[in-house]
Image (cartoon, rainbow, N blue to C red; front, top):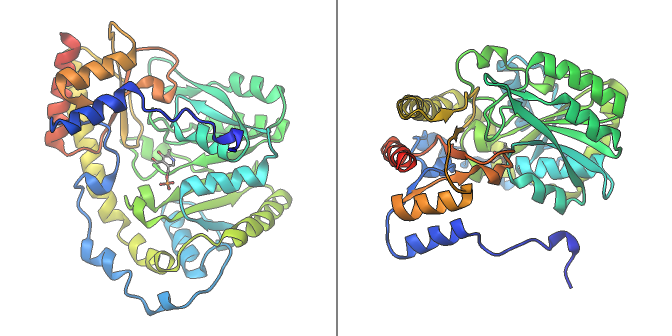
Length: 390
Ligand SMILES: Cc1ncc(COP(=O)(O)O)c(C=O)c1O
């Protein structure tokens, strides 16, 4: 009865089962995977956010395919503050970044065409590809001892096999925290032109860059060389995932860009998925970006600092992080990652994600969210490191 594209393995894995069992028994869990900002107690300007809904314009429906003009103007202003000039005609609003991916896959790929995804990366991609009938192909991010680098040869090797319509960048990446470098973008543009590939750049974490990574950061919203789509949204920019507002900023050579925008217009017009109250509120909300992001940055930087010091003391390797909400440890676990994560949960009451969820190429990776409340994070990290030692 059902489509092949939905024939997923739906049973719970041993780690989820162990978590459910622990919770059912009323045993506490130090959750180091918590990445829902609305549960992390980062502090929001509550009154001001709620005031955004009291807008008489919410009673009027204006079906605008790319999103309401004043909302797109607010997003253009957000880009401008970050040094990117994005005219409203090149901005498209969506109901989330995940939806942006779906629309772009529909725009670019026929069934069984391929999109190139980074590994390690975020596990949702495989599902987004399945749902949209595109085949995921992969390129590597390699760690050279100092930073993560895009393995351009693996992009070219995949592109040579044909039918690759887009390369996906996640910058900063989830979970490696690495951002694209200028020389990588230059080389990627050459490959994309050679093989007719577009670039989809997921920049949802670009407001959370640490140290010098902030000055070095490049958004693909300014990439004119190749058809490029820069994705962002309120889920990370304002730590408000429940508001369901994402955006696509398109750029590239004029002819292909205008064709892409015209076709996207039909896709968005077919769904008109972005609700009116959020579009009316977003200009006001975006003026609070600095305040909200400061709160989140304080949290992730504070937790990262604690983790850095603790890992150093325990002689456990912590990958350097350019930005984002995650950190990755590498250690000798003495057993497969999934068994280790279950043992840590059962014996130590600490919940972490094993690296294989994100397709790390080798065993021994542990992925932590940097969002949990400091008391939970610090107690969890202490127990995790003690467990590693034992
Ligand atoms: C890299 C990355 N892109 C996109 C998303 C999804 O964003 P949205 O809530 O806007 O769909 C996430 C969610 O965690 C993410 O980590």
